Amino acid sequence: MPGRPVATGRPTTMQVMQTRLLAIFAALFTAVALLAGCGSSEDTKNLPDAATLLKQSVDTTKSQSSVHLLLTVNGEIPEFPIESLEADLTTKPAVAAQGKANILLGGQRLEGVGFVVVDGTLYGALTAGSAYQDFGPAADIYDASVLLSPDKGLANVLSNFSDPKAEARETINGVKTVRVKGSVSQDAVNKIVPQVGATGAVPGTAWIAEEGNHELIQAKLEPKPDTSLTMTLSDWGKPVTVTKPAA
Image (cartoon, rainbow, N blue to C red):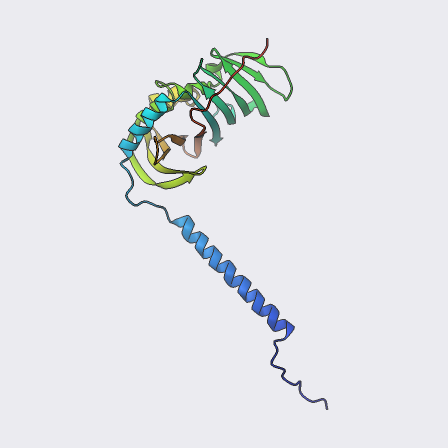
């Protein structure tokens, strides 16, 4: 009969594989645990006063003459055909805006629609490379340039937060912000997005830079359950040139 295998003291191939698999699983479990811990924890220590921070951001927002906007809609707002919009806005030398949007028009989804707002008139190119058409008053569809209006835009939204509460710190696009939660008045909501047709105060959230001049980095309005409109802002004060499309 053959003799028993002689122990060599070296691990078998199967033992080596098992050891490596255990090490990989251990590393994965550790990483998952660390990520779970990071995701569930928020910096809520020594937060600044929400009302003071809002006031500081209002003053800064009123003084700005240009911004880059990314607007996204989650859910459905029947009278608001825009799904997403990215644009540069300016008030100098005149109020104007230009960018691209994804819109729903007559049940059809149009992507990358170019638009320009000059002198309150909206010009749009519904397909890539097509000529711009005059669509009449921008306010009838949506005039993004209103966001820079001291009386109707983002500054007015911030001025009309009620019961504001600083909830936590968050980093938005590399900027350290303080998340402020509250309610925004019906009038302020309807001035910035008339198509929403708010009938009362709506939940609102503002992410404001904690340092510097406390620029508004992001704002979110929730006109009805499961529906929100988020505006992410950058390049405050960067020069913007908008050219009126050829007739």
